Amino acid sequence: MNDMRRSLFQNILWTLPAEVAHNIRMALLGVVGLIPSGKWWLRLCHAPQSKNLEREVFGIHFRNPVGLAAGFDPNGDRLEELAATGFGFVEIGSVVPRPQPGTPRPRIKRLRSSNSLIDNSGYPCRGLEYILNNLRQRGSYARELVIGCNIGHLTASHREDSVKEYLRVFRNMYQYVDFFVINISCNTASKRFILRNREEIQQLIEPLFEFRRGQLDYRPILLKISPDLTKAEVDTIIDLLIETPLDGIEAVAGSIEMARKSPGAVTGALLTERAIEIVRYIAQRTDHNYPIIGSGGMMKPEDIRHMMEAGASLVALNTGIRENGFRLLKKATEAIATIDNKED
Image 1 (cartoon, rainbow, N blue to C red):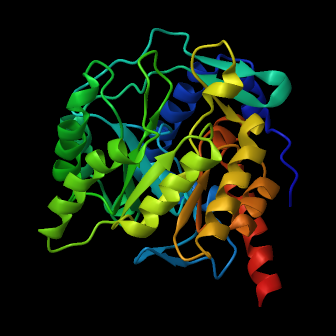
Image 2: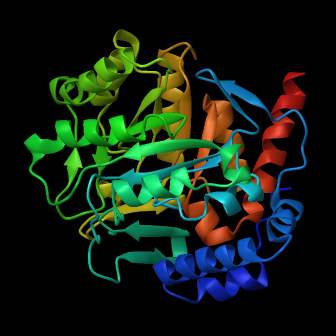
């Protein structure tokens, strides 16, 4: 079940620069989606077969708890194909108001010896209007898919403009997605946006709560946090979770500290232990009363199983799929099924 030896195709991709390999995968996924019965084939090959994987989390039904984190399909170009592949949810983004190209290539470095990446991409995004158009035109597969919107910081903007920019994305995306992840750890660009104190975070999220109060439909709001926070800073996030209308936390983004002097943030296996540690701490401090999306360092089925055992309600993959392929999805759900069987 935990055998994650790479396929021939994955080994070929592994010889290429990390971003080139990912772009090839996404392009081929699009080609398969255009072929008659292509989406049926994706479902047959990759969709989880384990039964009883459904979850009800923050009032939303998930067909299984394994999804894709922001950055894998940032503009929502492959939602149909990813839905057919069998993911329980997909986070698009980080979504910003205007198009931004990200940092110059090459901007993602593969650390082969540690099965990790250093991501210095700078959150490339085609902008709010492009993504909205993709969401409006999604087909039958994607309409059944739970979609999260990860909102990030526009790199070219001043820090004081962030509140109105996050609110603009939130308001425009509200009717098209199922939940929101407010990224307060935008750390893969030279101009970083990482919020650590209560006042800054509250200033960012309060307008979102106010807008939501006036809507007929309820959209859960989560914070995505950095693995580099101190214990006191994590406690501040937990206090906000308990004392405000926040619905949960996504932990964690990439690590600047692990990247040392290299620009960008580390993702992948180097992050696994820290990500699970933070999720376990949040779950214990809140008596497992709040949803947590576990992300960061989920490279193997046992990583996902340990993350769920630590207290995660859902798991969001990114680097694990990039480096090990879509087969990780099926194996991850098999690992989760073993937890459920033990509990029964």
